[in-house]
Amino acid sequence: MKNKKPTIGKIQKSLWQECRRVADILYPPVNGVTYCYTCNKPISGSNKQLGHFLAKSVCGAFLKYDVYRNLRWQCYYCNINLGGNGATFCRRMIEENGQEYVDKIFADKNKNIKAIDHYIDLLTEYANIQ
Image (cartoon, rainbow, N blue to C red; front, side, top):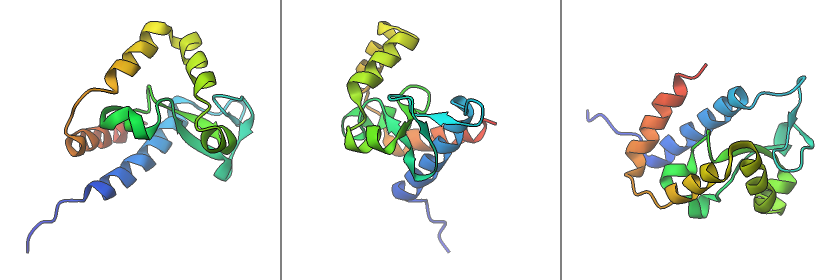
């Protein structure tokens, strides 16, 4: 019997779950409460979304699952209704990390990689974060 490789869809699903787990470690609740990165309202349950600084549609495979630089906790309203609340997201990223940091993220959106290999590497990296 042939050993089947996982499909990119299954890898992405697993990677997204790891991103959510790692985001809870990197951006832990304050006094037991997680706050929206862009509007600062308390979030939980289905209102607790992992939003992209640069939208999935434009960030490229290199940044799509970058929990360190491109993903932060957001409320449903900011993430879905406001399309990520990009202006506020950007302002906060600049305040926290500086303009050069944000410029590097924008430059990296054009980085060409083989997506499946990158995703497998990220899965391995994130699995080691406790």
